[in-house]
Image (cartoon, rainbow, N blue to C red; front, top):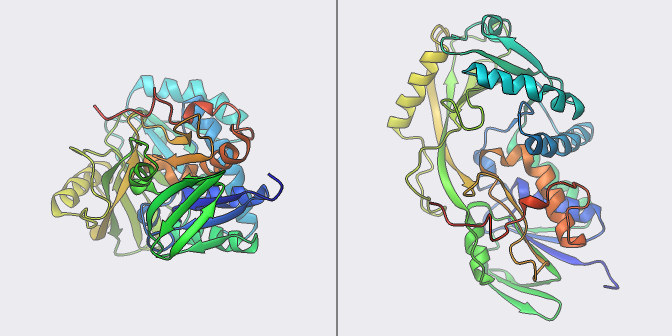
Length: 383
């Protein structure tokens, strides 16, 4: 290819914009298309948690690359709030996992300290540790504003010469010699490659290419917790979930008199329609979340439920993101989707891997992630 390749990225959420900036960093010409506004999908309904207290080598590898990007972007003006991240262990076996994986986190550059149950009040004085064995705490972890992240990336892309077309719905796609023609509500766009980063809409985009993509949107809900007065300490992010075990409750400081809480563990009977799901927190969910909070923070002064909302976790059957081509015979069509509730914190590395697949045919800058491609063994229907 004599000139810089032109890559069309479908989706202006965190994954799409991270892929777009990574592509532009490597010299590609980039056009981003979104049916709505920047960060209008799952990204905009995220609580923005960025944590590193994981036990699986691949999870830690991905976050090593992602955190390097966040630290670089923080130096360029992106606001990051390092309030710390506490992952609770309910059993001795989970504490053993934390101890066993601590050297891996250290090798990745992540500070991590283990706390026994009776020590957790040092971090969260209001925490009731009944049924808790301890936890792993990352003091450098934090949160960011998802909208601000996307606006930051959008401006970065524009400076690099990339273009973003909002309210530009993809309606049809055709293959042409050496590339693709994408028909939208704002006209046609031609590119050499396409990255499908459309979140819960990604299966519909794949279907336009004649491909089946098994990603479904699972509904999750978040609520603001209002306090009568500020706490005399900063509440770190607290997560009651280790490798799928735990209540899934997580909460964190947001503003002086506000916390944000959600249940990361989704109980869903099936996929949601991203165009027609209930995007508000229903009363039954508020009650369930309040019960979990009362169990874990029973003496929090003046706490009451505030505004709630709902979003979608785009998930895969094995709860690992899809990054790479569905069909190895068509390397110019790359998928970046299915990060579930970890889309924000994995977006930089998913974008990096997607850009590598598009431009180099393999994840050359993040070796060891080839298995994230949506191969026939992984891209399977939900049981």
